[in-house]
Amino acid sequence: MGSYLGLAAPAPALAQAPVELIRTGHVPADSLYKLLYVPIEVPAGTREIRVQESYPHQGKNVLNMGIYDPRGHQAGHPRGFRGWSGGAKNEFFINAQAASTGYVPGPVGAGTWHVLLYPSTIEPAGLDWQLRVTLVPGAAGPAFQPTPAPAVANDRPGWYQGDLHLHTLHSDGKRTQQELVDEASAQGLDFLISTEHNTNSANLSWGQYASPKLLIINGEEVTTTAFGHWNALGLDATTLLDWRYAPADSAIASATAQVRALGGLAIINHPFFPDTVNRFRFGVRHFDGIEVWNGRWDARNERALAWWDALLRQGRPTLAVAASDTHTAAPSPNQLGRPRTVVQAGGLSRTGIMQGLRRGRAYLVADRLISLTLTAQAGAATAGLGDTLAVVAVQVIRVAFELRGAPAGTITLRSDLGVLATNPVAASGPTVVRWPLPNAHPRYLRVEVRTPQGAMLALTNPIWVSSPATRRPASKKLIK
Ligand SMILES: [Zn+2]
Ligand SMILES: [Zn+2]
Image (cartoon, rainbow, N blue to C red; front, side, top):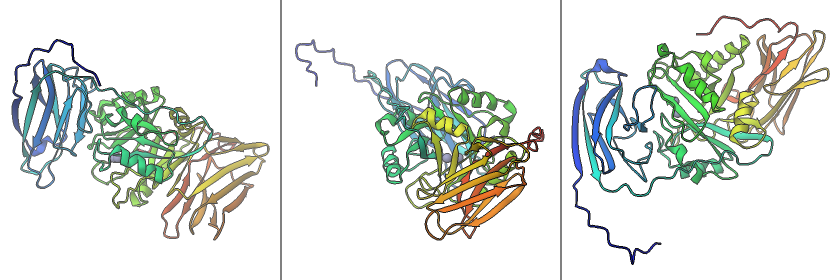
């Protein structure tokens, strides 16, 4: 605690009253998905900006909200990004030290700020909106210091369980960061990937919550609403990916390239969820993988799985991931860690997990109790998940599968040639299966384990097979 005794007393500041600005407008129903920027002139000496949005909430009206400072607000150049709350909030504040969740603290610089309003559903009558902006004068005070999570928790090689898709109060989730982390530890998760909608604000403070037992990796759920959602995984805490483009803008190629340049991965989220809104419309060729399992297993996951399998049949290595997309601790189809992705990594670190995922060294399970191993052997060569097994024409492929912690169900060995084998889950103890494949020449091998009702319990990424029969060129035909 400092003492100011002995210092000259500062001149008393003139008591300045906050300035209040009102902006109003009308969004007609045909302005769905149109970006509306409302300029706000902020004078020098402003300590805090507060924005309150109001519009009729009856029916389906949703007017998403965010803000940019004078450093830049144009699509593709979000240098001035200062926060986004989508439809989850109707007010926020920003000052030098603090901000509402979803928003980025820092100096309230003088110049033209832009509030972004984005209607994602509108009633036929359109909607009238109002912004009440309060500019609070005063000295800025000490600056906010970001505390990003460390990139390394440990350097021990192993299989690590993670949830790759989750939300807190920094977007439309209902938990604080601390509540999410406490629940993750209780669920036995080794890592989390933070994926708030269209903001990196949570990534600036995960260092306060990470621990040697829980790695937290930065991400963002890039959310267009009109054209679908995708996850940028493995980012720097300060990276913010823009979402303001359409498939025809061909901006998606540079956005996903930006993610890969950081060592990260671009994953298509819940491509069929739900069927009409948020349907994925960008080209799959720009992406590293597909979230084939989002929350509780259902028909939309089944469609995503079929889409992924069709890509594998074309010989296109595409990663499959499972994630909860959790928003709340309350009962829901999206419970933290259910499902989860288990990754073989050189260590519990951002780089280790990203490399494991990129190589396809990952399997997907319904809960923390289930684990598995899958290997394939031909002669002296052995391959695990994500590897390629080199086979000469006359060799037998020997597949070994072990499953632990699964309830009653059915195991299937699958390939581009269809289902190659079916076995029951053992009534007690681990299930150990050996499948010799004397005559098959599959392009890939993968395993599914399902309940008697058909719900997914476990799903592996493929082991690829390179044999004289499969060394044919990949089909040029695209899926979409
Ligand atoms: Zn989503
Ligand atoms: Zn999500």
